[in-house]
Length: 386
Image 1 (cartoon, rainbow, N blue to C red):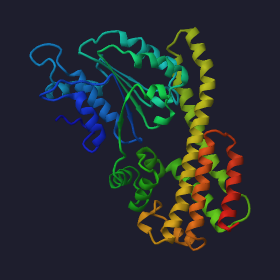
Image 2: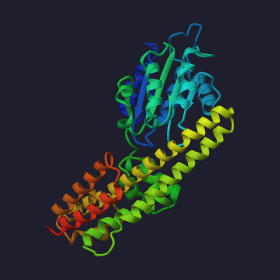
Image 3: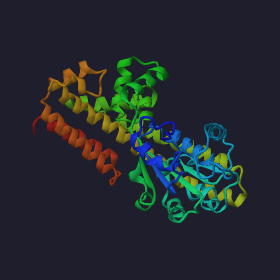
Image 4: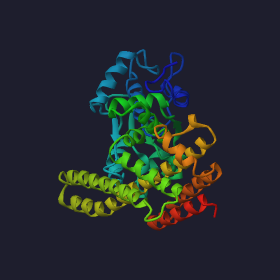
């Protein structure tokens, strides 16, 4: 059995893709479209590159036709893929925070009708597929329904719920599990230089999201973590004065603005290469798209902050019940013990439900400030037994 690099610890991906790569007794028989779904850092890109190398290295003629390519041929193709130098692989990344119709139209929809240049197949990989706006998704849908026989499409996402149902239903799902906690903590220590206890906490708090785990160790992520902790502890202490949710909201807003600015820079670079008519259209659309990027990234950051806040209450309950090995904030045990002495675990767990309720409401109600203000009042009332 051929094991694709990156699937050694991904049992579901290894099982699903076994048929795609074939073996000595059976020819490769890939699906026309795959949806690689799993948290950031779970290896989706690595496996997409490995699958592309395997498929594009298959011999088009000679005695090996219909059988897996030999390792030397796969290695050669893999090297070209790393350099971005294989004509039968198209890798699409969203410009900034959104994937628009222009991103998929020429690169995928129109390109699939052109036969392979060198290989027996053409492979198209779409990163962060969940960022497709409705126009782009509907444009891609027809291609997903009836692609040419030589085409394999691979969509990568860490938010499958944000994809249209019609897109998901036309792809074979491939699940990627998060990396082990210890492995992730090792990577954080090596990258950020933080202590092992902080790295372990960041790995646990991210709930499998390797990218988030790394960000929580420093910079904006560390600020978001501190703000979320302050919000929870303010309620647990029954403190008066202005609630600290504003710090968390400001940190989320800053992340949204940074994402929008990055999107605008990418659009500006792209616009310089276009004809005047196309450039004006792109710049006009980019203004609204940048606003959407800002709103979405701000909401995502707020959701992360609230999730961290909810985990603090959950950890307070765990400490109160003597389950210190199960806490996520592994580097804050002294503070958790202090807070556990201020309430009982049942009230703390009710606070988790309150926080999760606000997280769900953000999806349909954009009045974040009002909801956060109301959350603070409800948390204190719950902890006070009212």
